[in-house]
Structure formats: structure tokens, C-alpha cells
Image (cartoon, rainbow, N blue to C red):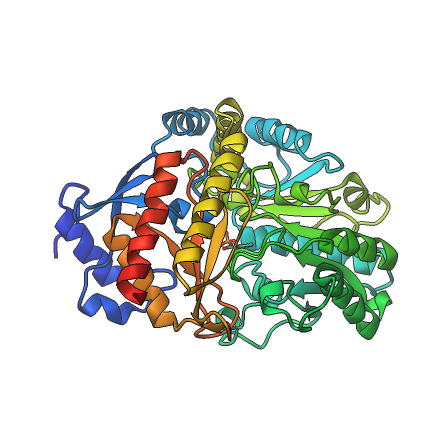
Length: 458
Ligand code: PLP
């Protein structure tokens, strides 16, 4: 076969079918259908190789393209930076790296230091390495365990997966490194303790129980998503976060907040944790940081954490870690412009307003369709959990949820399905349009879901 060119889109699709291994995909399907190749995007609209247009309600599939497609100013900022200085590794800084670190920490009171890498998984691995090094250097090898929560996800690499609370993603990849310990999830709709008066407090206290069981002197940190994303869009219950913060202080745990999805505007504030008035020690972020215009992630710490790596008398006391592509300047150049756009266009304000409209529409759909068991969300980050029976809360079969998603797509809107907590439990419709979404587009998204639910579920 001749090498495919940009102009021969049929050959591109064949090259894709023959040579590309797609993410999260059962390739048997491509024996009967063509792989989908996306070729162009503008705002929230995406065109594929067949010329078909869809409204993207998931920001590039996984909560990433926060400022929308086709942003010329980001492309120009990256281009200019690449021509001037594209890359230098290791100890050297860069102009956009320094400027963006300042811009970012200005938005994060109490946090001061930015460590660059290029994926969410990697940003979390850096955080884990910091915790482990602090355990060796400051706690005589103790406080090395890291708690994570059921249903949260922190990435695809083996240690990140070890800290993942989604069995469907994890079960085929063990054995895992030691020291990652689960705590119960905090989804009241699927309460583990039956009807409790103060579910938020109960779920937070479950963390304390794990710490006491493991021994507080062995536990160094806990990692949590502010709003759980892939685990089924779980907004924390009232009272949860203040108690978590208290527990971290009481037992000397570093609080690591994974903002890979919530970060940079998705919930209507710069960071999801800022919705809950908490003060983390380490914050990780990736996806929306540069809206997918370049690969970039950050592990942001307090000065107190940073200071623990500054004992010049000890040759082992600095953070002996590198990320080769943490030296790429395209990432921070894109992130600077991305942040400027969010500010200039008041996309935090739009996210709050459009998020309320989306939640309002979903609640109306819930009145009409009994298969919607629960709706949850914060800002432009919403989910609708589908059930076979509202009374028993039995999850809707995954194949039927997939049929709903396909029926929405047939109506020209792409949504996602999520909740990989257990195999076959992928029952939550996931909605996360770009932060520029309009009221008319929000209604288009929920109208498509309405039509699809009627078609598939009656
Ligand atoms: N953390 C969260 C909350 C995520 O949702 C993801 C990816 O979906 C990651 C970390 C991992 O990010 P990446 O895929 O960039 O490694």
C-alpha cells in the first residue's frame, strides 16, 4: 500500500485500521466498521473522515479541550516559542516555564512550586516519589504508605494504577508495588453504610479508620480527586472535605489533590479543591492545562514540601527525578495562552452559568425518564447514572448504556459513559463540554439525550 497522505483520507482510514492501536478499544469491531478518524475541529464542533459533524460534549473524549478547538492564538504562541527555543532538558529553566509557574501559583494561594512533566499519570508519580523520598529523608523510612479512594483514578502507569480505585482498569495488570491502600468511596447514592444521618462525615471518618488500622506512623499521604471523574462523576457529600482536612492534619498526612480533570476551570473555579475551601500540600494537573494543544502536566507543591528537598549537605537530599519532555517549552507556552483566554473570556463565569443550566436540564430529564437514577455534577462536569430499576438501583446493563450513547451520537452529539469501578458497571453518562459552550448547545446536548433515552429505553 502506498503511504497515506493528508489529502487521501480514505487511505488514512485504511492506514489507521492497519497500523494504529487505539486507546480503550476492542479492535475486533474494526472488522465490520471503519475506525473513526477525526480531521478538524472548531469551537465544540468536530468533523470526522466521512465529513460528519458532531457536537463534542466531552472536550476531546476525556475532559481536555477546555477552551475549544481551532484556537489560533494558542497555535501561534506555540509556534513562536518552538522557533525561538523548543527544548532543553534537566536543570535549565525556560522563559514560558518560569512565566507560567508564576501565573499558576498566583491562582493557588499557599502553593509555590511547579514541577513540569507531560501526563497526568506522570504528575501523580512525581507526587508519590516526593512522598516516598520524604519518608526516607524525614521519617526514618516510616510514613511511606499512600492512601487512595475506591472509584478514583490517578493514571495508567503501574504505580498510578496501584493507587487506582477502579477494578475494571486495574485487574489485569498486577502485581502492583506495595504501600497503596484503599479507603471507601464517598458516593451517597451507593452508600456502603445504609442510611446514615451524616454521610459526608461517615465517609471521611472511614479514612481515619484505615489510618488507625494501618498505623498512623506508616501512612504519609492521601490522594483524592476533588470530584471523582472516571469513577462515575462523584461530587463529595456535605461535610466530607473539612473532616478530610482535619484528619490529614491530625495524623500528619500530606494531602495530594488530583486536579487532572477538575483543574483549570472545569468546575467553575480555577481548581476543584477551591470549591471546598481546603488547603492541599500537593496538587497535580494535566488535561485542561493546555487544552490538548500541547502535552503538559504539573505537580505543584507548598514551599514546606519543596524545602524538604534542599539539604545541601546531603548529596541524596534533592529530588533526583527528571522528565525528558518536562523540558519542552510548547506545553507552558500553550498553557499561558490557555489561561489568558479563560480569563479574558470569563470562562469560569460561563462554566458556572452553563453548568447550572446543564444540571437543571438533567434534573428535568430525570423527572421524565425513570432510568436516570441519579444526576451529579459541578460546573461543566456532570453525570447521569442509569439504572435498570430506580427502586433497587440495579445498574443498567453496559450494552444498553452503550446503545444510549450511540443513539445520542446518531443525533449529532458525542457524550461519554463512565464508572469503571467494576467490570460491567459502566453506567454513568458523562458530560463535559468545553467551557465556551452556549445555552443553545447545552439544550442541544440534553435534547439529544432525551431523544436517545426514549428511543432505547421507551
Ligand atoms: N488523574 C485523573 C483524575 C484522570 O482522570 C486521569 C486520566 O484520565 C489521570 C490522572 C491520568 O492522566 P493521563 O492519562 O494524562 O496520564
